Length: 166
View 1 (cartoon, rainbow, N blue to C red):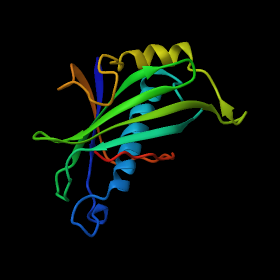
View 2 (spheres, rainbow, N blue to C red):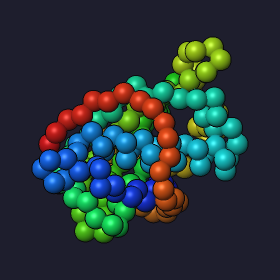
View 3 (tube, helix red, strand yellow):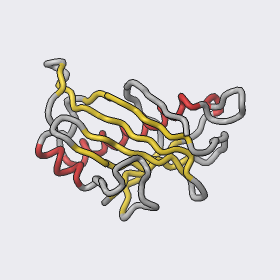
View 4 (cartoon, one colour):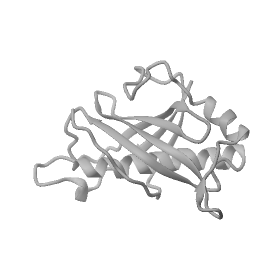
């Protein structure tokens, strides 16, 4: 199983009054990693998710405070569940020493012209299966990737949020 690696820079403005990255900022980090992951799938393997997608749910377990520093954090992304018309992407926000957060996002493919959800295509499913690991059954991922694809820098996107604090 491959994992997508995204190097996410930390910004000074990400910190809150307590001196660590604000919990809401983690949603932006996950968004950047998810959009990078899905657009890379589109550009490498055809029209995957080119019609759009929407976020149906976020879940985040905050494990440790993350403080500002010049080195980016790594966000590993992989698929933990795939249905007919939705998939769950799981993440770990980490560096070489520790994991700061584990999270998951339910993503629904969306037909922008018809303004309604759509099913995952056979082509999309084939690509996503290379990143699928359902052995954990939750956002608590394995210790490391078997293979990885890497990216750096921010990207855009949109979604809703639900956070759980550990």
